[in-house]
Length: 115
Length: 114
Image (cartoon, rainbow over the protein chains, first blue to last red):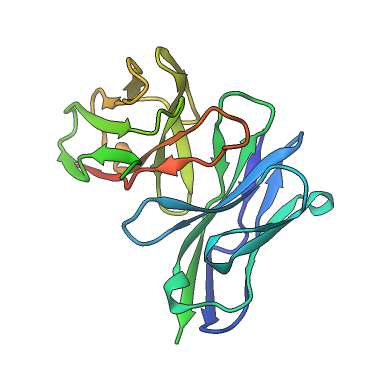
């Protein structure tokens, strides 16, 4: 069965520091991978997605993610964190060859930014 | 603005009551889904639909019903509310075209069952 693991439940970084949020997935075929961000009391906003091709994907708000098939990972990075990046981040995997469009989400990582 | 609209934003129910969470999208998306979000568990799929008249169960369908009579609307019905259904519910939609694969999420309905 497909699964997504975000090993870090909570991360605190200083403003201006770099950030990496980890995501590992279990999936038998080529996955479609996503990162979403959720601000408090809000819905989920898509940061970036990977379907195929270049394994380094650029997203909104200065985020990027790298797909590493050998490690079954899709880690999210940002070179310099801003206080407004404090939120909860979700990694998700979709079934690439399926028409159901179902997404499997990780448990989420809460990012706190120190001034 | 185009998007996914969920109503109500907040709801308190008594155990045993029934209610319908509304979800509407104006992007002509074929695919729609309902998720529930609980602390430490991410989002779990309740039901989904790939088009009008077609629905199927997700990971946690028990206690919920759905129907899809139009492309725009995908209501979620709680038949007999239980405290275990206290959660935040999100509706999402996406285009059926393969390369446009990102889901658009509504702002959620926070449900408390007492």
